[in-house]
Image: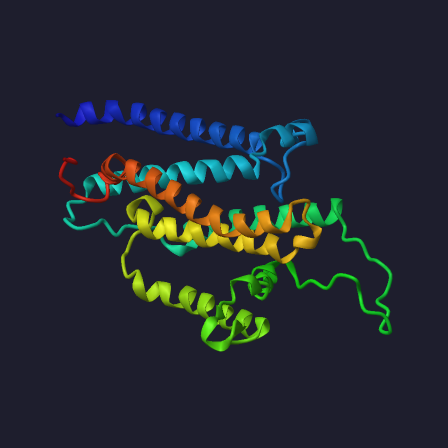
Length: 276
């Protein structure tokens, strides 16, 4: 390129430079005009109203739903990508995943308790009279089952070798029964050493639990038999008949569900063979 050509190109370059600077200044001016005033406050004509802000707000229920859906999707993706043989031990960090889930559950139950306390306030009766024994003395509802075990006097055996007399009094017999029942409850975790997480994985122990829960309910009803509109002898029979029936029914149902349920539900977690 000759020297004369360079001289001819210089003005053009200057014009382009000047034009570029002008365009930059115009863009900066437009941006400054569109930007909010100092302090981050938008102009009055662009400030959203309260109703507009309310329509843009995402509620807690929607946020919680989106979080659970995202967690489920990420968990599924991790499990599909993993090639661990025994079991995929995958999870999320406590913050913010587990914390959000736990707070959602805690908030639900606290809200329910607050609602019940506000709508169904407890009745405060007359103060107790220390000089008069109440007609009916009952423990708190969660101790009715152990109170019912004290009323198993009809099961206290009478020994012929003692002339038809009982080996121990009904009160002592009730205390012994309490010790036996509580001891059985305490020893169950040592007898069941499996790692099942669902009742269908171990139908026997699940049915044992159902039997115990139903027995706790029926023995509680027996402890307040004077308040029940059922004949005492019928209530006494149902106390020991209903729990085994409930246990057998639950065992049969879980046993019939176990084979297909274990394979279909856990095929993402275990490397299983198809059920035979």
